[in-house]
Length: 299
Image 1 (spheres, rainbow, N blue to C red):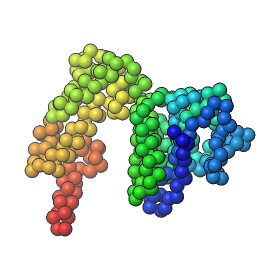
Image 2: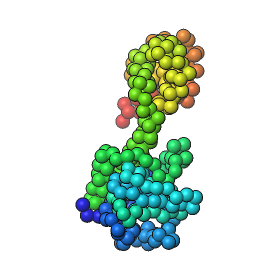
Image 3: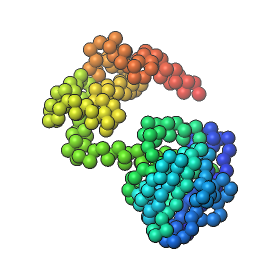
Image 4: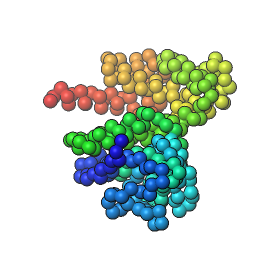
């Protein structure tokens, strides 16, 4: 497969979207070759002696070969299956080893939404090199992204931004799953989720649930929160409130009927928890739903 890259223009509409693409490409660097390949525009091309600073984010996925990256603070080896993340204004230089070469796929992007993603606790603390291994699904997304920018059909910027988010989500998912190589723990959490979803109309006792799953409550709560991002009790509550929102939006049930049908002991308690989760009272939520319905009917 021949090397390919393309640098893109963007407009205010692309910037307003929150994540826009500047460059994407792939290259096979043969053993013993000089690096980087020639032909990149000013601001992107660099020499090993000087390094470079970009004003955008870049994701580099190495699927063959090995190399190194240097920043002002550290030198890190790059291996097959490495994701290299370059942040704006970060001095760096990287290259494949002469004895291995490498195959790289890369994308450069920017935007306000990109900034918020990289302020996420995971990406804000991870080093420039993240080992994820070889994943065909990531390669396929890179290739789909390349095909979109080749054609530059209307809306391709927005389509590409979605693929970038998918890649970042995939990286996060892969690393999170590494914490759960213990299949029995993962199975317990998955079973717990099923049980919780099947008991949305009851005040489920989480300690009893842990006992039924043959795991200590403290360990269960710890690993569940790490796996799901919420404690078991909060996961249960979030699903109950979500179901309550559905009932209030799609049935003729009153707030009182909804509260009791979902197993809440009082309207006051239901309203308090509903507001904590949604930012509005059940009455305000119903009023907003009715206003939207009336607006649609009047059109």
